[in-house]
Image 1 (cartoon, rainbow, N blue to C red):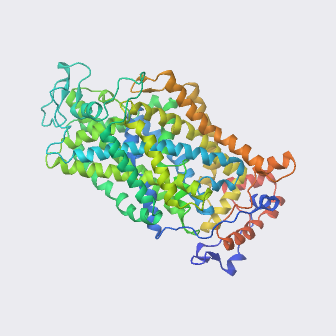
Image 2: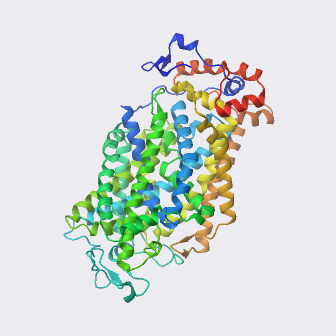
Image 3: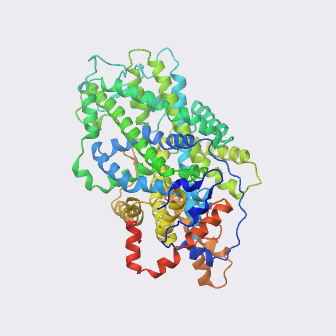
Amino acid sequence: MYTNEAFDKNNETLDEPRKHQLPTNGFKAAEAAENDTTKPEEVPLERQNWDKPIEFLLSCIAMSVGLGNLWRFPVTAFENGGGAFLIPYIIVLFVIGKPIYFMEMAMGQFFSSGQVRVWEMVPAFRGVGYAMMISVVCMVTYYCSLMALAIFYFLESFASELPWTHCEDAWKNCFDSESKDGNYMNHENFSTVVRSSSEIYFLDSVIHQKANIDDGIGYPEWRLTLCLIFCWASVFLILIKGVKSSGKAAYFTAIFPYVVLIALLIKGATLPGAGNGVLFFIKPQWEELLNPNVWMAAVTQCFFSLSVSFGPVIYYSSFNNFRHNFHRDVWVVTSMDTFTSLLAGFTIFSILGNLAHELGIEDIGEVVKGGTGLAFISYPDALAKFGVAPQVFSVLFFIMLFTLGLGSACALIGSVITIYSDMMPKIPVWIITLISCIIGCIFGLMYITPGGQFILTLVDYHGTSFVVYILSTFEVIAVMWVYGMESFCKDIEFILGHKVSSYWRICWAVLIPLFLPVVLIYSLVNSKPLTYIGIPYPTSAVVCGWLLSTVGVLQIPIWAAREYWKSNENTPYEKLASLFRSSSKWGPRNPKIKEEWMLYKAQFVEQRNKTNRLKYMWRVLLGIEEE
């Protein structure tokens, strides 16, 4: 087996001895390329690269470690029984999350293109890339609305006293979030709607939440509108300079959050009742392991947190040097993502334990309503209890929350911008970026209305959570079963210089294609109508939600039909067959490397054809090579 040192990293080419030391396994992409009659597309040789490998790594951490960890993970764990959620989440992370992250990073780095152009690999599935784009637009628009909330709280933190610290006279059944040293209100003296001042402040003074959206969602809150404009302006200014500037910003956005989170955890752990909250977080309710909704939530959280099956991973890795060792980065980023999720979970559940102690409630699950506002209730509540300079910690926390969201938002919307930049290369990137940010800001206005949290939950489920199961299933099947797992593994081996382990192969070829459809189908059969904090949606909203899901899923057959129509083949069968083999455009971006890759892969076809088919498939699955 050859080593990666045989590569000339400056010229991105193979040395002469290396060309005679290639392995002798076959893979089907060679035959596909030989039979393809599509006219090659002229691809620009120049493509922006990361200045340093560490900037790519930190940018991936900033992308994956974001609001999905601080906002969505505690909320999802809270709504799925706390500790009962952790076991499925860890299992899903190793079986689905890490393997898909590795696969997408390899796809982007190998072809040096975004999530649409990369489907020159299998043109029939180009619609997967466009469906990813729709999901990304859904996600990034409400992502920036959460960042707008963080900016609003950041500005409010400069007051002489944090405005959510004490109850106002008009707030009924309220207790001060600042309460400590045992001076708690007694829950028995109040109705069941007793709430902390931080909860009332968020729901009634910030977002002015409606009881339902039967009569509409209302108008955008003007203060949050200004904050939303600021968020999108920040995204525009970062993306206008590409990965060069975002890579430099990652030094701060990837490291600073841990300082603030650890400080909050230390403070939360010292509060009365914190231990009960942490116990609720880590103690599994074994019966919940048989609940398919918990597994579905675990898979969704894994996709959302790591940003897999949405496109940003492919987008970021496409700017790597072709020989970059992304295998190491996959393990670092996914491990940091899990660590951050657990850190955020321990922090917020220690606060929930303290809230339960104040209210005299034993069940942590009854402390506060779920939903996206949980992080803007529990975290501010913790900040109110800081005895020394709570404003300082509040400023640090919310600027951290904003920077976390900024790193993820830039990756998300950047993956959309690169699609249109590839389609319209003559239009300056800054114009495409400006138009994308303006449209995103306009769509984001619906999330900062009194009914915005209802819409956020609806779009989160139908635009991202539901669709991502289908997209990831098609994505893995297309790569591993249509393009061919051995073809893909040999592409990775060509980059890294070492074999792909059986762990990745078994997850890609067997576990993911079986696990995802089973969870999705079982969850749909047993699903209940979507609600927000127990409040049902009107029929019109439900219809709009399913229309959104349908539009996303229909991208796959629509673009497959378009590829069929564009095919230059003569007969219907030949046209159809051409959709399921790689086009001549597929391969490394650099022509010299592509020539070496074609020579490299051609050596495997004859050996594969001479090998017993069943034996060959078994060797491919386990990564066993014949001498």
